[in-house]
Image (cartoon, rainbow, N blue to C red):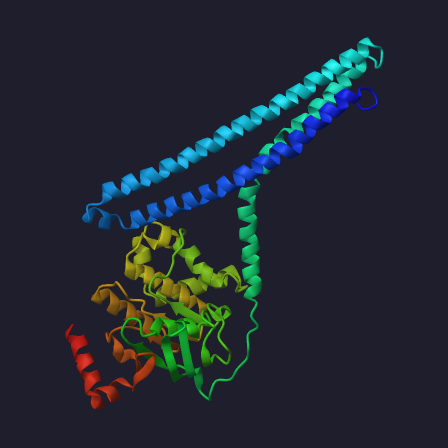
Amino acid sequence: MFGYDMNYAILASLFGLFIIFVVPFASLTITRKNFQIMKEAKYNLYRDFTSAIFGLSDWISSNKVDEFMDDYQEKEEKLLKRERKIKTFVHLRENLVNLLAGATAFLMIYSCWNMSMNNVIENVYIASFCMMVLSVLSVAVMTSEAVAHIPGYEVSINRVKEFYAQEDDEQIEVTDAKNSDGNIIDVKNLSFEYEEGKTILNNLSLSIKKGEKVAILGRSGVGKSTLVKLLTGTYTDYKGEIVVLDKKPTEKMLGTEISLLNQKPYLFDMTIRENLKLALLDAGIEDSEIENKINDSLEKAQLSKLLQSLPDGIDTNVFETGSRFSGGERQRIAFARSIIQSNELLLLDEPTVGLDPKTEHELLTTIFESSKDKTIVWITHHLNSIEYMDRIIFIKDGEIEMDGTHSELYATNDKYRKLYDMDNIA
């Protein structure tokens, strides 16, 4: 249009720049700040609501349901007010952009009509110019809305970047080491602290032979579960030496060389079959072999009767966190998943916490009877079913206090005998 009407061309260019650059980036500045605030507020509401659901009985028993609801509704109202402000801003922005686009189109028609009256251009060009302007404007007016969505996409993109950055960080080279003859675990002069001055494990040394069943006992907070995390490579900032299966342990060994059954194994909101298949995702074996492994694991975990009582059998959905089943049944399904992995080393991190004595005894019997050929390290806080163990290690103040077989400790150690007899009475 500069060749026909300089005034209109300059004015249309200014409108275009305003629509494409000024409004979108002003919108981006405002929405980014509000989006971050809203995202944090939504997260806090979700966290509070989830905590309230899981702790509903405690809220009721403490008679503070109304207090929680008032606080939650107040936070929700603040969030809704901010959302309404954003929507108001968006409507105003859209109206402004459409007003400018309409003015541009109107001036286009007026300018072309004026030039046609003065015989500067033919009448037919009016329609052509107007069609071009409307086509360009239909795209330009969407720029503001598109740019306003950038903060939302940034969160997703950053999450993906963090995932791959973390994956790159985890590309830790597995360092070959050497266990002592016949051993599967060697720990020498191990010291670990979560923060400076608060030692959890202090110069601890132990060795576990291949096929040995070892129980590690101690009061809460002495470092039993910390030791498991060190053996699996979850924690790497320690002093001393750890060798597991002729390697310095890393998290890559979990599932592939080490099986772990902890206090609250997670079951996903899908069928029993699909939960068990997770153990073989990267195994690269045929479906028929997977089915054989699953059936074998169910038999060893003594889940056959449970499956027969379910309407859909192994294709029954477990619901989120396995809430369809009792604690003992969830642990059996998780144990079946570890059986499928066929790993030589099995770590048990207090898997019976929260179970009644009968269910606990039945689960432990199942685990130990079906894992006779495996090396087992069992983290526990009491002596129930200790007769299955080849060795018993007591940890106190980050150090080994007692170490020996059940019969040796019972025959020679009054403290152990008293603890064992008290446990049996309980």
